[in-house]
Image (cartoon, one colour):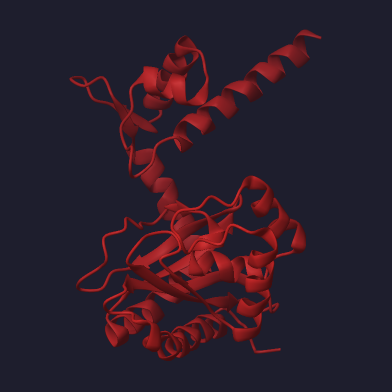
Length: 259
């Protein structure tokens, strides 16, 4: 019995440590113990002990003046290992560079993770739109072009889970009706690309296309984003062809043969 209790305690400690590491974001890169405790619903003493352990291994650093913690260099080294192992990251880099140079807008590679879109790769243009996308950023999938592409090629179960999570209205253009979203996703699949005009943020348009692997499975979305002044409605189809072509090139580099 004592062995099982000790095992459960260790698992709980590991889970708490992982939750704490995941609570740091680009928007909130530094946090105090009290802030972490409140946001995660953990005991303050538990958070304090866990942070001490994480600091001893270099996963977090504590500012002696502000008493705030931030992620440490051990996280950076691990992220470097992950990035080097991710074929999609490596293979997409030159394609994104050429696309950005060609159309003059910022490009991304995104995947679906825990019902969110997460950005794995980003290449900025000379005049990027300031709507705070960054590597590791999470966005809801139903109102972003990359998310809609990924959902269009997902199972009905995944789509229903996104719907059950809630279709929050970000702008007047956000799709918040389940059936309307499903119909829209079917159209996205048929067209081979998705666009999002002011569905998550006013004044911003994005266009995305699917990236396939050697099995013919959609593993990511390639997208471009820019202000409406530059990506006007009549330009969407023309840009979509270039985005689809770039996504096709990345797919080919991933072993896809078009079957």
